[in-house]
Length: 303
Image (cartoon, rainbow, N blue to C red; front, side, top):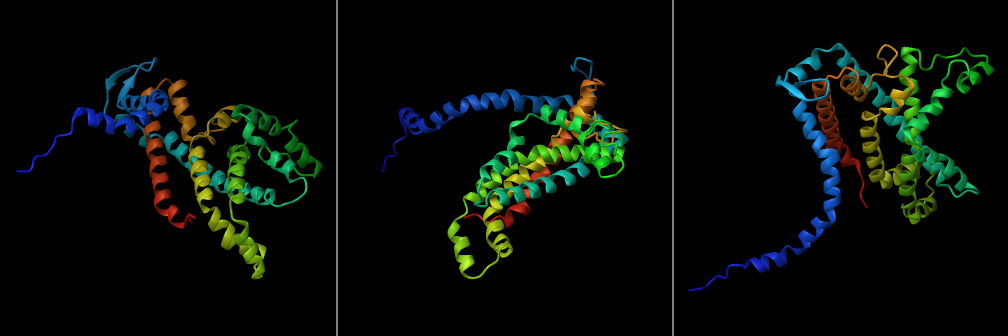
């Protein structure tokens, strides 16, 4: 009869040494994620089923009543519409502008390093500093934008006071803020494309736009997919520029979902509905991101 040897605990301990070593290296990150991401997320899910007091402590279990309240709230529905418009205004424009600047900066021209520094300069600025700069530029009387319009004999614009222009102004600020990061990533992707592909195309008589369509965009598609995904997620999380420039106004014209969560929780002290909004926003972004991976990644060309 053949006898089977049962592995000893010592052999199992030796086999898992690599896993335990990896876990040891990951432990600091896991602790940080647990404290600052996972715990707040699960606690928000917990609070979304309760009424809370002014300190945020749960008092009465209400089940899905907070979620039902959101769909009955005209303010929340408006914030959803405003957020969708904001995402449509900022994401395509940010990616196209960053790609255009990256294509320019990738050319072998004299002094191109200075332009690369200028294009990437927004990356080193905080949201608060960027918003304050644009706050002065949007000023109705002393702002440089209205001064330029008046110099062209055009009427001044109420950038932040008009309900239509306010969202456009916030979008312009956000596009400018996102350009630096997207530009650097796309420029790095362009510089990783094999130059021999362009040389072969030029020998065959291919023009610049044909090379752009057949070589640059396909080879850059993984980087573009990453930038589109990150810009898309960041658009849903835009808060600082809204708080500093408009405070969600005028007439809730710039009241994005993320700002509506802040206002509901820290101005009205309604932590239950605010937590429900946060969970709805998380679920929406997760679903849209998964759809983007499912359908958008098919067009990505990996080398």
